[in-house]
Image (cartoon, rainbow, N blue to C red; front, side, top):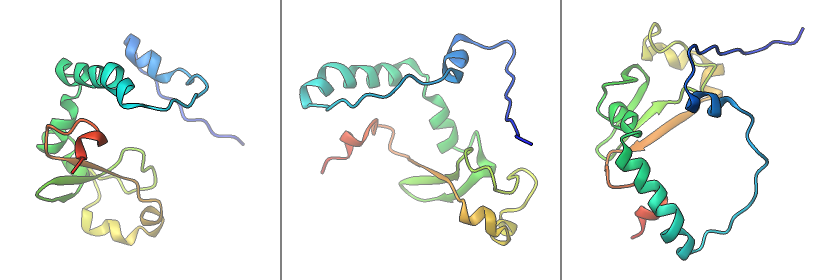
Length: 127
């Protein structure tokens, strides 16, 4: 029998509804320095300035998702990503026992976040 995954959010905001809608077909865009300066950079700065990325600070500071923390290094953190569906429940299974879940280790899905708040895109990592 087929299985289905259902997520019910009620009441749902317009942003949540849009996120759940099927994505339009993809097109390839070649980003030039001019396109980045005129379009991408203002969009990214708008996101940063709006406060809608505060969830990142909450994860980095340990206010949220502390149970998913795998590594807290000087410059970055490494968390179990919520997309990692085969992992043991981080709220009830101690991290020491995660290694015994071989299926989970094979499917490991992580999220690394740099602690430097001024990094907003890969372009900020220029040497």
